[in-house]
Amino acid sequence: MRSSRSLLAAAVVLCTAGCTNPRAEAATAQALNDAANEIGGLKNDVAQLQTDLDSLRSVVARQDSVLSRIVAASPK
Image 1 (cartoon, helix red, strand yellow):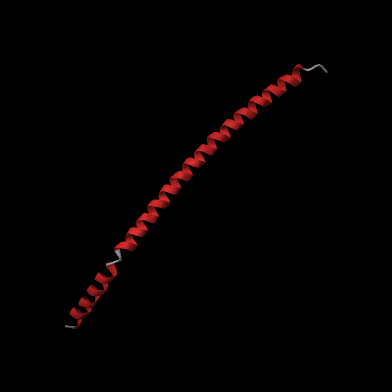
Image 2: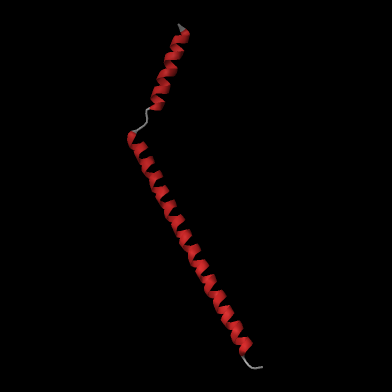
């Protein structure tokens, strides 16, 4: 008899612990979705920055070559 009361009490505790507020769950899901969207946006920003940096490196390398040719061609 005592074990069945314990079992019933445990079942009641588990059921009430498992029942959460649907609004809280929806708010949490929305917050996680918003965070995922922001992370995706940050990934796109980082990719764009990497592309811009690669482009700038190319321009600097080209200008360095031009300057080297100008220095080499100038009379001494």
